[in-house]
Image 1 (cartoon, helix red, strand yellow):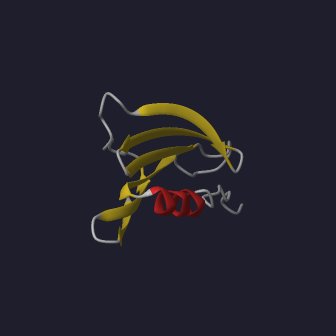
Image 2: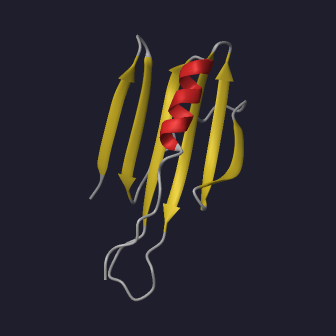
Length: 105
């Protein structure tokens, strides 16, 4: 199972969030910068591509189940594209609110 949420941003921009087990990669440009960051205590793989005035970014949050639960591993793949610097900063702030909330036992 998976969920996808997409928000149109301005005339050409968008912000998307996928939750499931099989994410895709959208930013494949050789000039993209890859890095590992920590957001809310979570290890996150990040890819950023700047093209003139436009920024695109992908985040991969890898969630592993707690031992002893019947939860499944899943990924949150969040991305945005075609955003100017101010909108990219706002999108980063929105995506920085992603947190892990363990299942109740």
